[in-house]
Image 1 (cartoon, rainbow, N blue to C red):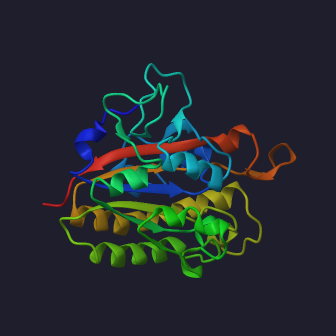
Image 2 (image 1 turned 120 degrees about the horizontal axis):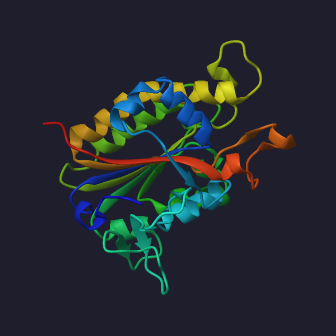
Length: 270
């Protein structure tokens, strides 16, 4: 699955986990191949890999992600070796390149390896307004959410990056960071990314991704100004816009469980 040995990366590099919440694989790939996400293409020239999510909505998918179960290849693979794993008896997907932890989640595991964990939230499961929406943020040493980083603000990604910059500036350079960003812009409502549009559809979904792409250089500049950074970028699930009569997600549909995935090790600026 991955050519990276995480046992060599953990402790050396910062780790950034970027979840493009609700991004569909078909839309992500079409935009990439048409050259409409040029900033992602600079960082990930090979493009999006087709994978399957372990969950059909944010809460379920992230519990799996935080235990090390990232999206898996959509085609049969000789190796299902994972980047990270919480140890359990009988695991067949943790190998010599997997960073395994005795802790029940990778965030706690990385904390005990000396990492400071930061979450910048986006969708409602990160807003800390109820007991349920505190569950995922509470995995982290520090977590941040506001209306400005949520799904209703058209400038949410730019606002999230501003928060990220402040967070990174407060951590000593020699301290390693595990950073999680829940990118909310693609989640409905996304019709705001096409002027005059009042309903969400695949076109506005794509427009939201193009907006996110326009913000990417500022985000990666934060990473590379500080440290070598291992970056994981993926979606947690797709969503439906009327296909077969369905709207939304938490549905067992191919467009929901098929997600885009990328990973790379970025060097620090010299």
